[in-house]
Image 1 (tube, helix red, strand yellow):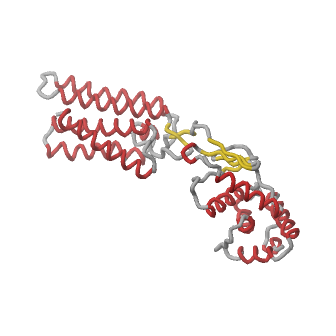
Image 2 (tube, one colour; image 1 turned 30 degrees about the vertical axis):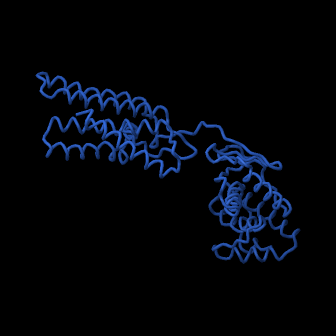
Image 3 (tube, rainbow, N blue to C red; image 1 turned 180 degrees about the horizontal axis):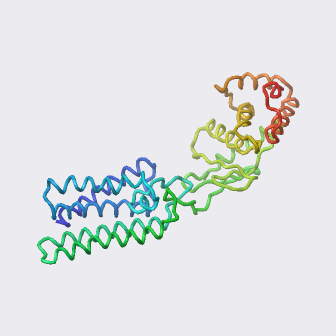
Amino acid sequence: MIGNVIGPATILVSIIAYGAGAFHSGSLLPPWEVAVGVISTVGCFALIGGAFGCLARRAISVPLMLVVGYLWMVMPGAVQPYWIRNLNGSWIGCCGIESELSATVFWAGTIQNLAIALAALVLITTVGNQRRAIWISIAIIIPLAAAFIGAASTSDVGPTADVERSTPLVCSSSDEVTYCTWPEISDDDGNVAAIIASVRTDWKRAGFDSPGTYRAITTSPSEVVFMIIPDAPDIDIRQSLTNAVVNHLPVCAENPSGYAPALDPIELWLLRRSGVNANTDVPGVTELVQRIEQKSPAKQAAWLDRTLNAIANCGDVSPEAMEP
């Protein structure tokens, strides 16, 4: 039965799961840990289904398998402690572009799946065995022991199975600009770095100095967190860059949410300085920026300095103070 039914079923479902994951991720090469997790999870459940089919009638084994599958694959995501969800191979929350699957969770989940598969094989071999009770006891102990080990190793892991990605960033440069991002969206031809350099030049001409280093992930206050796919339209790169730079600006520490709206006219003004003839739906912002643009370049730069200083130091950003 294993060779004729369970094996082909495992392969078929694994291919379907792999294809679905590749379709949604846009990549045909998922992390090998995720592929192993999918195959081991599908395989162990195929064996459990086979074991239930051998030990019970179809009227009982089919609904029982559905219930067990739901309790093991769905319910852990809604309950605590969190380590339960890290043992079933579903690995909720894994993985964004900035993270990767925790090695601890991977091994705990894989061992748990293998233990369940081994228990299912033991149950299948008990059919017609005179010492059936002993083998059933062994089949119960095996996954419980794996769960105990997995719980001990993942007890300090949070609700998600991912950790900070260890893959080094790939960098490109252009005119004193360094742009570093993940290998799968690397700026191989330097197009993104060139656009950043061009926008920085426009901003500097208008009186705004922006950082020279842009990285997909960083903790340095002198670097901007920014990444975008290299073949994105020019206008999208400029809009995303402007938003990233504005989010990097210092905001009043005592009331950051209260001062956030004051960044809207600055973002629109910078975006228009970058060559994008944009407007915004935020009430009054477009009109304010248009009034600012009617002033001389020197007065616009003075307005920018005054407003940035007020936002950073908890100053006056009332509508009257925001006027040029």
